[in-house]
Image 1 (spheres, rainbow, N blue to C red):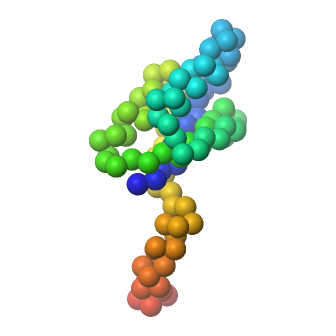
Image 2: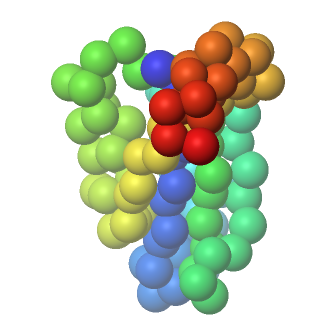
Length: 103
């Protein structure tokens, strides 16, 4: 199942990594292991953040994706289920059924 892995790292932790020159290397090392579909970096709630799209086959994989961010950057991590356009098209019948039943 596809998830948006939202990571926000505290300014202090990211600044320390930036100052010692290891911020980009740390992020790249994590991404090399996780091999996401896509990764975007931005600010969120005034902090550095990444929106990283990953596929998980089982909930037991969550720690493998969360722990590197926790340990390396003291990050706040959220897993948000996500669909691409193809997934949304497959969901059409369920949406139609919900409309008939509850709409």
